[in-house]
Image (cartoon, rainbow, N blue to C red; front, top):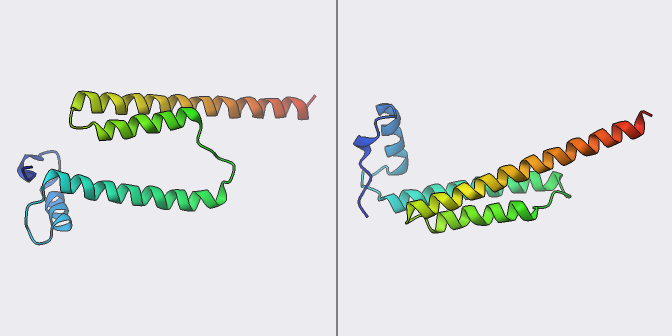
Length: 123
């Protein structure tokens, strides 16, 4: 794997690029793309685990729906098959769409249950 060419990242401010380079690799050696991907993946997973741990203590009844599980599976498959960009991004896109559908279904169900409670409470 070839190292990242930081000179081609023109969208970011040069000072910001220098800070990122120094933070990722203080010795100045080149890190390849796989090493950066692994480091970022570990950081994201640590943040997600921390959020699940914090939120999980306060919410006991919130379970993963089958549609959300399927969405998660598609996203993980997209990451696994990311070598072929068309397949990887397609799988991730399907996962995101399924997750959005699941969120919309949950919102509609919660609105419906609130409207029923209002109609029962106020005859």
